Image (cartoon, protein in one colour):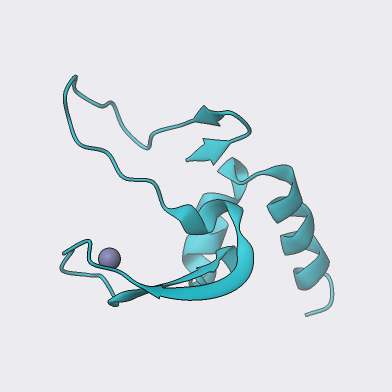
Length: 80
Ligand SMILES: [Zn+2]
């Protein structure tokens, strides 16, 4: 998880392992592009927005999200 200039991992990463970053963690511009990651649970596209994630995933990512995403999350949830 990216936070400022740091990247945090959910678990220990062995040396040489391939890693991925969910770009939606620090964006809410809403652009959409095709995804070819090959994951079994991939939708086949990415919507470049933290707020396009499921509510459950948003909650799990929120503590690791950049301050502007947390502020926007609280702004949006304050009204609904
Ligand atoms: Zn994918």
